[in-house]
Structure formats: structure tokens, C-alpha cells
View 1: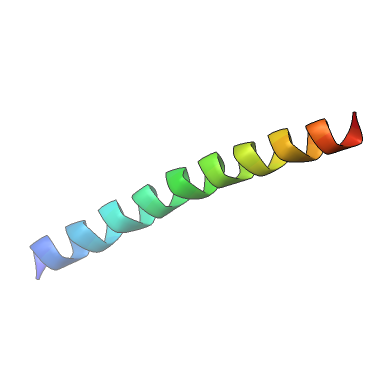
View 2 (view 1 turned 180 degrees about the vertical axis):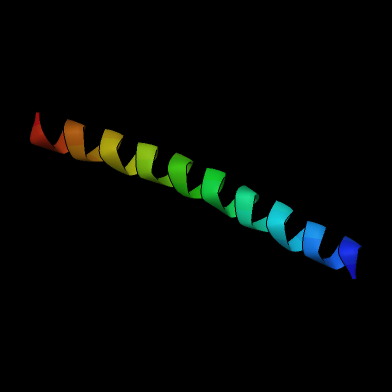
Length: 35
């Protein structure tokens, strides 16, 4: 059971980092569009 909870938290953290990268790329494209 402990291993399961650890995995779920690790996955959540991974998703968070993925989201931040996605947002960064989105912002970059938006900036270029504005230019």
C-alpha cells in the first residue's frame, strides 16, 4: 500500500512539471503571434 501511494504522488508531481512546460511553450507561441 505504501508503494502505491508513493507512486501516485510521484505521478502527480510529474504531471505538474509537464503542465508547466506546456504552458511555457504556449506562452512563447502567443508572444510570437502578438509580434
